[in-house]
Structure formats: C-alpha cells, structure tokens
Length: 256
Image 1 (cartoon, one colour):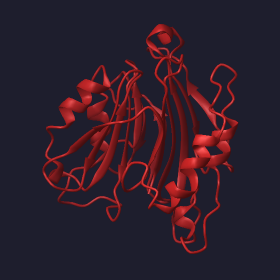
Image 2: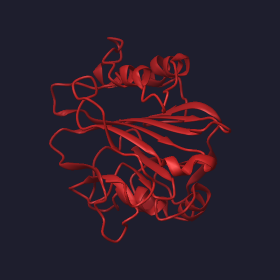
Image 3: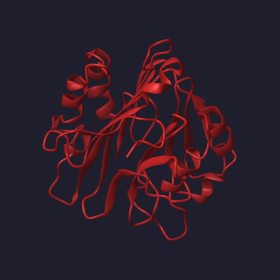
Image 4: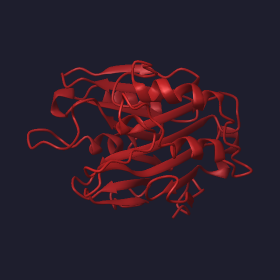
C-alpha cells in the first residue's frame, strides 16, 4: 500500500511536489531511479526487476507519474499486464494532459486495479481503475492531496486520516535551501494506532516480509524556471534509516 503526496501550487517557482513511500514485498528485486530503458532515454525511474516496469518516474519534459495498487491487488498475476508499464506509457508524453488523454483509452480490465497519478507544472490527473474496462480520470485539485490504495484524500483510510492534516500543516520544502526536513520526518514516521496495525504507519515495518522499501521527494519547476531542472531526492531504503540523496537536478540529458 504505497503512499503518494502531491502538492500543487500554481504560480510558485516550484508548482508541483511529490513525496512517495514505496511499500512492497522485501524480497522483490528492484533498481534505484536511473535511465534504465534504452528505448526511453528521456525517462528516469526506478526499475522493478521482476516485471521490468516502474512505480515512479519523471521525463525530460518535466512530466511525473506514479502508480499505486488498489486495496486487495498487491502483486502480479499471470493473466494481467504489469501496472508498472503504465508509468512508462505516461512518460512517453510531453505533458500531463496528453498523457491522461492517451491512457484514458486503455482497457482497465487488462490490469489489476490501480491508482495512477500523472502531473506536470501546469496540470495533474488521477486515473482510477477498479479492474473494469473503463478508467475514471479526475483533475487533481490545487493544494495538498494524498492517495494510497483507495480514494483520493479519503479520511476513511487510517493512514490518510492520520497524516493528511500533518502534511498540510507542515512547513513545505524549501527547494532552493535544500530543506525537506518536515516532509522527510513525516515519510519516516512509524506511528500508528494499535487498532489499525503497522500497515497504517507512513513508514511500514513488519515481521512478515513486507514494508517500506524506498522513498522519494520530487520537485518540478515552473515554465519560467525550467533551466533549473527537476529535483529528485531518493532514499534507497526505509526513510529514517536511510538518508535521502539527490539523483539528479537537470531536466535534460545531463541528469545521471
């Protein structure tokens, strides 16, 4: 049950921020974000070694995309396509609107259910599939939103109920000062209500081979500041135990 936090603030120098924890089986192999796909040289994303796709990525045009499993659909199945393909398909486009339009025509029944977010410095969309043929496409509101394995900003989810307000009340990251401390602390939180269990913490730690395996913080610049490039800070393990480090700050080929 991964978590994605999206802050949209039109008119700001950094109008789109992502914070994401990836929760997965600990023995599922993966590679950290890089340019893993020769046929997609403008895409930087983590790579799932099992299925070859990704859970989160950004392209040189400044489009970001992330996919999350919906409740009860963890893991692959032999009769469905990998949801990790969806992020790569979204990142084939030069802007979020075009990506959302293209993916809206996909057959949702070809995949296990998912939440897909695709955004750039102007637009952002949530594509929701419950496993039926049609997808629901919803523009994301301005301000801070949060999504896990259910509905956007659904406070019926214990994790969203516990952390949405905390993210909204926290000091937003200061990109120029490289200060993401408030969001880093929230991504690392292992607090949960006993009645909900450890899977409702922000950073999940269990004794059954499942938990938070990595964390990302991403900022996309406004059109007036595209020369700054996007910022991606990545923790290749549990946040709190593993430090965040930049994996690149340029939107062009210079990003490593």
